[in-house]
Image (cartoon, rainbow, N blue to C red; front, side):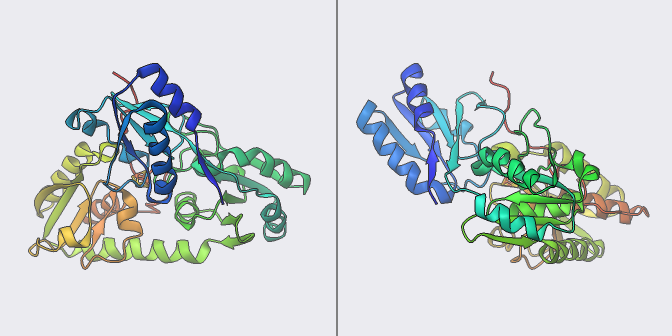
Length: 343
Ligand code: SF4
């Protein structure tokens, strides 16, 4: 596997903007390549790069607000390719792509997908350029292939861990989804969001995995957490402080509905929602967090219910005597507040 950061774009930005100091943030899996890039920038242009040591899981984790605090001139956010190239006041998105080919795994997929005729193709940032060749390959095997349209934030066929709004609208046009890349995280998310059979195509092992069991397990745990929270009288409602996850309006709405229904609410704000951070709040019996929904849906370490936005909606419905329905089946689990428009 070779993941390449788009260095050319970085050099163009530096030559155009002539910064003295750059703040860089990147996901854990790209830190080695990012540090190599920082060294190159220093050597080629004499520009100082500061690497953000905070967690960086998605496009929501930009560090725009930190640029001025660190007396930097701009920020580079690495590896979360999107339909936008700049966010906030100072941040430039820099793509990273994986060179791995999908030829072999597409052949394996042709067998695994045999019971289905219409396939929805989706993937995440690093493999977007593989959608076209895999589409052609699957079509050559006789499948009808659908790739969801891009939108204001996401490119054609792209999914985030919380936003499936490219693929969700085509779910009725396909029999199953195929997700390119070794990421159970994205494939399970798409399975839960669309309610469709979903397969992960791993190009490193040339394996195709049906996500049904993993998705069912997450769905059951998500439902169980909602029912456990029904008994709670004291709630903590957490607003995330990460730049792309600030859902203050949702936190207020959920707090109000809980209070209207006789629950006590303590509102909290934090950057990272972890079991360790929640531990001191012993009196709180259940939490709702309006930051990253995957903290709740994939979180195995909490000792009390910690609900995401869709789960909180289900909880409010149950409290108010309504059916919660398939609450995870929606196009987005959070409306990302990434600073999309440059001021
Ligand atoms: S909020 Fe969405 S984009 Fe951000 S880390 Fe969570 S899943 Fe990824």
